[in-house]
Structure formats: structure tokens, C-alpha cells
Length: 311
Image (cartoon, rainbow, N blue to C red; front, side, top):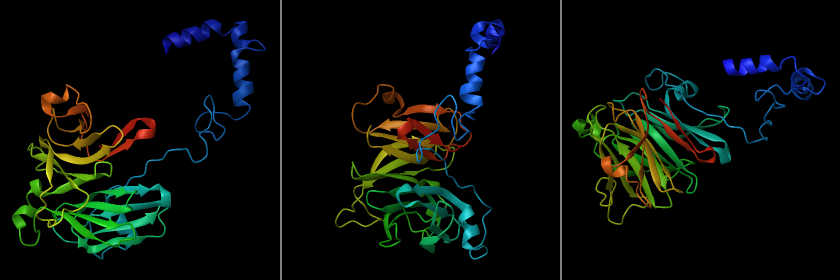
């Protein structure tokens, strides 16, 4: 800043700066007088205003203090959601109301992006503790990890064909599993290109028990959600895996980890298709960002080559 100020002072009284065609004159004439005051102006500034429909916006839900079932109307209950997933083609959002962790009172609802037209996708009591969810635009299905419910749900976006595709235990009959975080499904993503879905089971927050699994989108013949034979371990002994997303173009799986430093509270990636970087051979993954407080949600923004992490 001091170098810039010195340079500006040196040229303030010169023809280049203050003359009839100087920098100051052109700035006033071409920008200030025309109301082109920057990116916050609808007329732009040094950069042109974004094209209509090309602006960006981040939508999220903040946690609301948990309440008992029926205590609040649906509009208020939605604010206790864990995650907001947006489908732009029909301008809808699907928040998950997680309810109370030890009670089977979760729900999945949908609404337009302005908060109107609220509908129930999965009613209260049909899902226990919905956490991260994923919308597969290709198949028009929604996938939900049900933490204390020890299940992964799948349904059409119109709420039809609700099914359980993975079950790690029976929350009603196996209380020990419901209280054991190694059995908790948390984050989920889908790759139609590979014909698989991926999910996390995080374990205790600082235990190094986190794992990532994969299974076929189609349930193998003769299998049930509780005894699938196609489940594979993608990564294990992780600090506390939470959310994940697959980049089908690059064949790379990204995920967030909570847990203890130096490997916890990190953003990670693992190449599943194509050449594997040498750095990954040392610890089975690449840590690409660290130092988060509590790394939770993850989203890829391919068009801008960015990764968004909720901390």
C-alpha cells in the first residue's frame, strides 16, 4: 500500500494523472459519472456485471435448537435441519429435520428456494436421524444417511419408492449399535459413472475409526440392505469422516474429516480412477487443506474450480 500511495502522490500533479485526458478524468467520466461503482453496482465497474442467471449464491441451513415432535409447525421445524440440498432444475431445496438423536422422529421436506410450497418427502417417523443427503439429478432420486437409524435411505424426489439400501444394524433391537458411532452412516454421494454410491461411518470424533465404503447403486440379486455382499472399504483408520463428494470427470473422491490434528479437521482426496499420485502412497490419501475448527459439509464448484467447506 505504501508503494502504491507513493506512486500516486508522485503522479498526482502530472499531466498523466490530472490532465484533461488523465487517469482521474477518465475514471470520473467513464465510471463514477455513469454509476459504474463496482461489483455491487448493477452497472458493474472495472469488471462487467455478471450476466443474468450467471450469478452465484450459497444456500445453507443453520441449526435450530432441537424440539419435540409436533411442538413446532413445519415451517419452524425446517430450521432444525442438518443440510440443505438444492436442485436447480426445478428450483427446490430439501432440508433434513434431524429431530432428537435418540427418538425416531426425523423427516425430509422440500420447498422452493424462496421457502414456499413446503412438502414432505419422507414423513416424521420414517427416518430416525437424517444427516447428509445427496440428490442424484440423473435418476431423480434422493439418498439419505440415517445416523442413529443405522440405515441409508433412497426415494424418488416425489417421495415414492422409499427404500432402505444399506442397514448397519437394527436401532430398535440393537441399542449397543445405535450408541456406537462406528455403525453410523453420515455422509453420502453417488457416481452413476461408476455405478456406485459412497458413504462414511465416522466413529468417535477423535478415535481414528472413520471409514468410507462403496456399494453398487443396484442392490445385488439375493441381497438385502442388511447383508449386502458388494460393500467395499474405500478408506479406513481415518480421524472422523463426515461428508464426501465424487468428481466423476477426474475420478477423485473428496471428503472432510473432523477429529484430532494433524490428520483431523482436514479436506482430503483420493484418486479412484486413473494414475495415483505418489504422495498418496504414504498415507492412502492426499490432505489438501487443514486447520479447520470442525470440518463438516463439502461441495465441489467445478465451474469455478473451487471446493466449499462448512466449518
